Image (tube, rainbow, N blue to C red; front, side, top):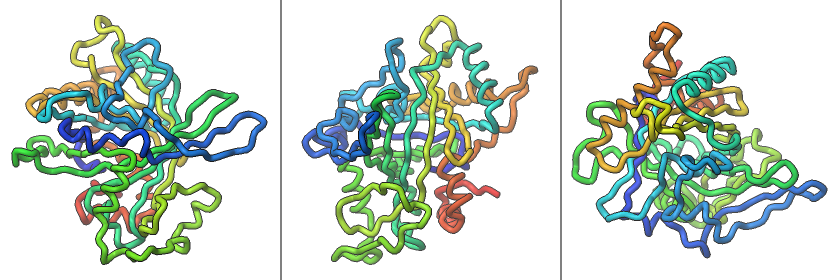
Length: 348
């Protein structure tokens, strides 16, 4: 979640595929379906393939893709491979000050050979940690969330959810720094029940009531009326952020129509329900020696998207992310603690 650096890396170890993949019979998620003429009803998910990280494949390069799914980040997620294989997601944010800037970015993307993928995705994120001031997870650069994705069509639609944990990693397995040279950050991403187990295992017993704690009185009034995701046990975790996002995705589908450096890059344009918009360019690489080149390619596209008609690039300072902006506006004490801990970049 650090935004002081211009590039973020997400590390997924193929050797841990078995532990990251939740069996279909034990998936923890829920789905709410709303059909015209019927009342709202929440039902459990069982065997949902969206949670099966080992076999999910990115199909953005298919013309038949019906949606840009926010579960599927990068060009591939945990393909089968050797134990030594890794996936690194290289990403960089860029500013979207207003709706006019979105239209301008889309125009530039089209001129660079990018095409919009599927229809607009809608999802809601809930972020959890211990109550103030014990933010045990976030101050360790660990971000535990529940993401609900809207599925279906205009007449029959619902929400499909999954627990997710993004856990910061600073050192590569060989002991070298993954941040050297570019200030990049490395995140390991876990989903489903494994994400819940990993998050709970990180909580210090001295900060929670092991016998089971009731945190109803600690729930912020701003979440009144919302169906707050429930972990099913008294763990002390409470939501500190909730916001909705609408996302459009762009990628190069015709390889002959674009700069070869842009092939394999994905662009995401996000708008939130609290009025903040931000864009992101990302790609996947499968070895650490390809990170530098990937960063250059991502930065090149970000520079292109941020340049004026004369080719002059705008500011090189990366904008704040959605969660960081939400915390600045709604959880300033929590945000300041993250600044002090070094897990977020300073902002006025």
